[in-house]
Image (cartoon, rainbow, N blue to C red; front, top):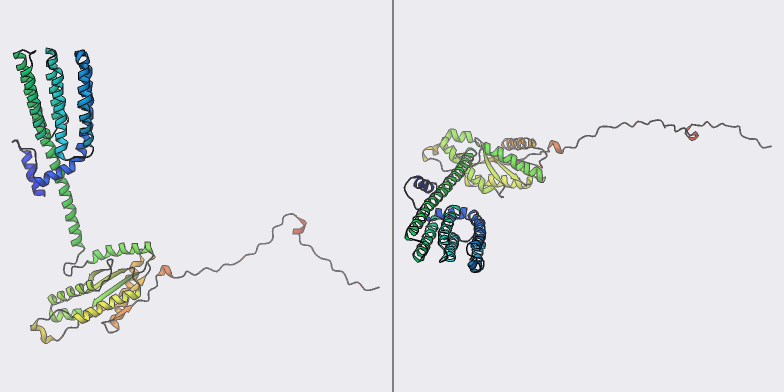
Length: 443
């Protein structure tokens, strides 16, 4: 696409005459991008032109009062309704052909109507009619700026009308007709040149904007590809440590917002250093590639993602996953590796003995409480991984992980202080001492 746009820019940037049209696909896109704005502008300019056309009734009334009623019928009863219908259609985004042809037809109708109303009146009216046609030509070619083919056709039609008017007119002398024809031809030629230039500039400006948009889009795509390459491990095709850090934080924040479980599985290839030393680093690369393919088969949901964490270590992020489900994923991967085995060994190295095709896995699960806690969960999964390796490898272990934010906080002891009662000034608030009397003896 960009090559075609550059070719058209070079074509329209030269000084030679170029027919203002693009190859079909580009022409279709040009019309699709410019049609709404152009249709709205043509509708507005058409309304202005119609008002100006009807205002000529004032001149008709002053110049030829006897013909005013006839002019009123022609202008308001015939031309105006047709122009209104064509103008209303412009708002409905018609095809480019109908849009431009409708405006060209309206311009020709206005010019020929003006010639028709001013014929056989006076010499002044005849000269006034020629000036009116030139006004329509200027408006159509340089204000409305019809597409060049339609401007050419409309100008030719109005020129034929002018020639018929001059040929049929008996009120003008031959030298006056010649002067009028010369003025008409010069004005039409100049407006057509200006129309061609404006059409050419419109198309060239559109091409330059389109090229800019394409370049920006291409640059954006290139940046996305480069970002993807920066986050992808070239050997296994999995995301690398940078991709892991970015994705881990994003998924973790989502889990925090939804308060759902989050699980991490750490995977380590058993005896990988011995495999590299015995069978070579190229064979070790094949082992890592096979582990990466098996990781994809072990994942379950769309949000589950696997990464190459570094060296022979891999990590799997499992959002919205319980510890039991995470253990199943880890066990499935361990079984797949154990069953599928490692890539075939070079026959020249078979004497070194068979290679152990196993992995060890550590699992940790929690409900995220804080952004920093994700590092603790990763450390817990790594600790579980080393427990699996210490238990003999080729097994899965889960971490008994309780996030610090979830631990119950001890409540500090409270001491109760009793304040003395406040005196309110009443007698009942003053402590009274009871007097004790000796018991009465019966008389």
